[in-house]
Image (cartoon, rainbow, N blue to C red; front, top):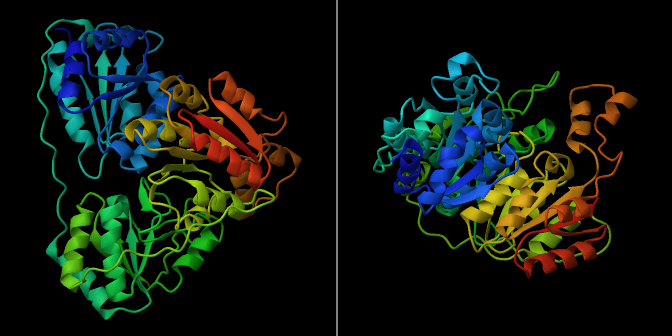
Length: 513
């Protein structure tokens, strides 16, 4: 057995059954091993940013890591932006990067790079397998490391001779390390704050606290104490829709965030961090939380936040409460496409158990509120601010949650970063509906010009314009095997969305907004 074969066997024994890949010469023995060792679902991406973003979306829905396969340091470099998003989402990823043979690397051939150094910026664990005999054990260690709470990227660098040399040994799966529990004083301090009550107490949720079980516990605590429950601005996965506690998120825009957090006197962090603004702005605050607010930590991100919420509910004597009623489903409107009309149509038509992969950026900031009465579904955000995560995330989520329709709410500017994901969706016949919000500009940057106090002229404004020439999204999608159409009315959107939900496979709807 060579090292590459031991790698595949060991990954499978550790429960890693999906590999998103864009391989090169250094990885050919790994690719060949995939033919000889059955059981690994191999998914080809035409750009490494698709590979890494798909691994992120897959793990968010599957609850376990996928492997990536990237070609040397430059391939890793191409995938770094969506590894950054995955790191910010605390997503477990086993990131496998090929490299020069150990004896060839000192000669400094063209693809030689500081692969380890580049990997450390996004990884919680990095290791290079220096010989075939260590590859299997290193793979098992990488899987275990990726699952350390709350989840992280484990990068395994694989020199090509470690793959092709004989002497590989299959490693058994290592035990998953349980997350630490919150300390008793963390529970008691939070309980004391909530017992005193008052409108100024805010429970801020993050991580798995936003999954269904965590939201149910937060609903009990809110109903018993009257505290306010909100979520971080961007989240890896949030249970949403009818029967789930509808929570607002801390807004992106700094002035709106300050308004949303005004009046907070006690902030309790549950799997979350104290909110900070995305950027520093001249003359504006760096955190939306009032400076005189006291902060209590119920559970740090690496602790078991659901268990902490359960203990907190018990400490407060919270009884069972009926599931929240978020009101009826919105109705499909008529006329032009606006944020409100698009959100209403989405809420009216999305199927139960849909997965929303949201990179709608500016146009879709209020979509979450408008869909709280829709059937139960999950909502995924691009968490790290690196644009181009939406399409790959939707691709991976469809593989990680088979049988569930994925709806990708996608801005046109960020879509151009990773549009190759459409090809993978067609090749894999994935049930993904892409709602392409086409305003032909970087709308978010127009807002940022004002936020930083810049005075743009023609040259600056041209840098925000992607409409010269216009991108023909139906033609672009069609060239990659995805059926597509465009519309500029709510009625047209409703018809196309309904059509896409009735058929299998991917579909793209360009909304001319």
